[in-house]
Length: 125
Image 1 (cartoon, rainbow, N blue to C red):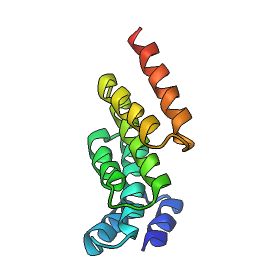
Image 2: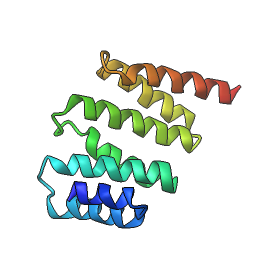
Image 3: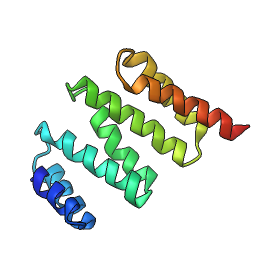
Image 4: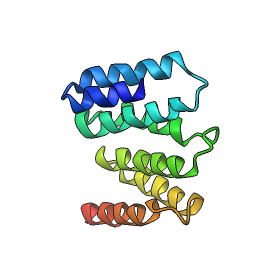
């Protein structure tokens, strides 16, 4: 089903893709694939809809400790911080970015976290 959603996105049917991914979350609430569906939904809402609060909810679901995929958790935590950044809530964004740096010190998301911390300070003047 995840691939069917990806195919809909490739066919320029993003709303249908989001519906398919949402159905994965609803139908398979205990499956490890729900984290992939949440990630795709979060990215869709962040990038295409600019619905930062809704996207953040999906990223928080992926960042949960129940998810054993450390790299995916690091990316989801980073994206949570990006949602706060895009919503101009820089204080919370800095807190989440520091969380990425502390909890996932060897992940590639650390550099991006530093980037967003710097960008946030620049925007604050």
